[in-house]
Length: 434
Ligand SMILES: Cc1cc2nc3c(=O)[nH]c(=O)nc-3n(C[C@H](O)[C@H](O)[C@H](O)COP(=O)(O)OP(=O)(O)OC[C@H]3O[C@@H](n4cnc5c(N)ncnc54)[C@H](O)[C@@H]3O)c2cc1C
Image 1 (tube, helix red, strand yellow):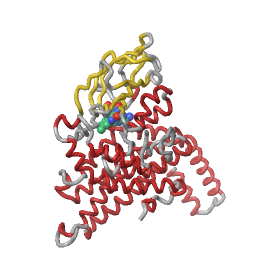
Image 2 (cartoon, rainbow, N blue to C red):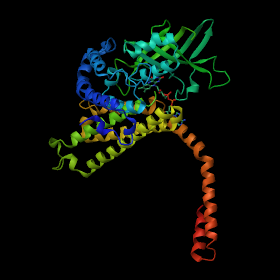
Image 3 (spheres, rainbow, N blue to C red):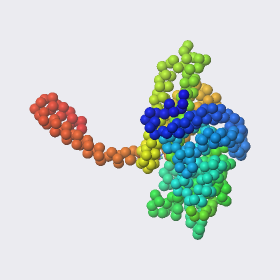
Image 4 (cartoon, helix red, strand yellow):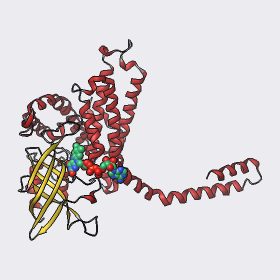
């Protein structure tokens, strides 16, 4: 059965025949090449310091296959990317999300996808030659350095690492946490966010800027690698970095959600496979014949499909009107998708019993990624606050006027029945309740 049969009907008019056939190839590639490569990938990474020294050879072998299949740089619509729209890539990213190595094998990994989009949009020609071209070829990787210790980084106005002008150069100082790829032997570019002109500057919305810094610039120290629920995420990793007088010459957004839908689908497959396992009967019946389990499976299907619609809806809006016009849809996807995935993965863990919490299934790893998604891309609370504020502005005045208009019209209609007992009673009821 071709993968395109699973495209929700609402999205079909936006999907080209070329995208449908690439989706089929991506599905096959993830199922038949990436997932079987998970264990060899871990084995080649090894233990201890060697995990950070070189990339597992199996990853490089997968990259060679990907280029022949035409699955390279699927995320990028322009600048020699594969030329797909956001909604087309959204469907492909869902499959990439089923494997923790598929995104890098196809050169669609975060944060590099966002960093490449940034360079396409704002980079100078020489920055594109120096950084974008090798990133697009998958020869190097990049990091985005925003989060800092000792401040609340979900509010970007707090970012305080210093960017100071000194003649023809900028001097960078400060400390960064969660710097992705800090352990990766191929990570050569840091995109550093800092504050120009010190904390006392007047307008807190115009003080920040980003600067491209080579990872090996003098003055940069990687102090330690941070783990995520105990996983080191090698060979990529998340670093604690300081910059001390680093000198530079003067001068993504919903992909995570798409991949997280894929993680939820994987959990549902594991849930169903265990529920149907005849060796795992309880009280004389297979798990899949118990009403509770069927309900969990049904709810998971409904919830995943709802979340997928939300993501595709955001992608269509971005394609048609640009990311700024789609802020509401993007925020909704960012909040809804990880919560949905966590519910589904949690049910899958529960069905698997003790095996669900150990290394025998991918479920703990899927849960770990989905849980961090509620923080990594900006905490839920910040997206909800912004979405709520925009919704109040959008509907606020208009809705109040509309309700008052409706009330006046109801009063007018009721007054034409004046004298009728029933109408008078109803009118009293309406007034008391409005
Ligand atoms: C696996 C992983 C990868 C990451 N990758 C990167 C990366 O590539 N680059 C990078 O720079 N950073 C990265 N981060 C860091 C991440 O972006 C930050 O952790 C995130 O922005 C939140 O900042 P904070 O940890 O300082 O939390 P804080 O800003 O201190 O927020 C703490 C909590 O306060 C609450 N809160 C905040 N604002 C509000 C509000 N308005 N209303 C109600 N509650 C609120 C939320 O519950 C929030 O979780 C990564 C983190 C992880 C775990």
